[in-house]
Image (cartoon, rainbow, N blue to C red):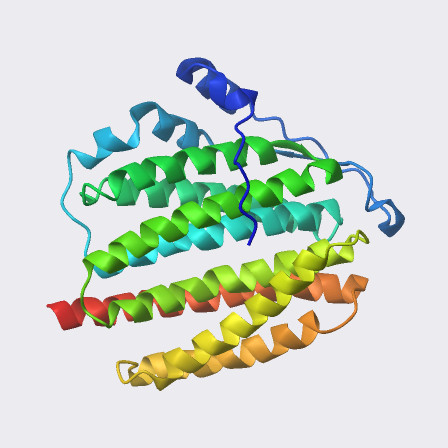
Amino acid sequence: MDNPSSPIDAWSNLPRVPRLAASLQLHMLPLPPQPATTMNRRIAISYAIPSAWALASLGGLPALAQTSTALPLSTAINRAGKMRAMSQRMSKAYVQATLNVLPERARDTMLATQTMVTQGLKELSAGAPPADVLPLLNTLSRQGEALFSLTAGTVRTEAVADVVRHADAMLEDAERVTRAYEKANTHPSARLVNTAGRQRMLCQRAARAYFMLANGKPQPDMRQQLDAARKGFAEGLDYLQASAVSTAHIRQELELAKGQWLFFESALKRPASTDTLQTIATTSERMYDAMDNLTGLYDAVVRDLFA
């Protein structure tokens, strides 16, 4: 995994109120026709930062954390783990758009991801996080804001490398938060929630690596990322299927996810083509939905065990 220095662009140096004003200026440009031969040219799609993110940034995480009751630790692991997936999903959709692969869907995915991060961080910070977790949440919030600032506006192929670096920095920060919550939960079943949640990230990371390899530039590290994500996802499925905690409903959902994964992995092994790229785009979203559902089921089971 990359370990970038996480530079913050001029956006983050703006005062809070001007930053909010800038965020609220939503410019939705019409999508011009783009033939497949123009993948490496700038694609005129405008991505606006949701006002909810800007509004949340005004209050700050510590203020939110002062007026709430604690989240169940399994739910906190679930929510923090989702931030890992959001980092990869955001960058995956950005790369997808530069390839002109279902660009409108990519735009919708980016906007939905920003909203999920805003809501997720607000819930975590309002859930009375432990003292050692709160500064990690603040760092994660700043990293998310930097990523969303970078991906706002017209999608540019020359910005892809920076987007990927920022996304991986956000992934690392989200991993630190998730591990901190898991460490606070001494019950071994908490690992199930973390593992199921990690599957959400791995399917997005695999799709992003495939898209990066499809842009025609030499990127040996992306081949390694793709292979590692595929291997990690398969191992995660095996671990979840072997768990005695898995209920009959969970096992049924696991079988459905496994079938979806076999279809997705088959596409990941094929050479890039218009059809395959579109299959990767749509199937990676279905994989995310399946694993997000399973993570919620494991969260509920672990909460019942603690109760």
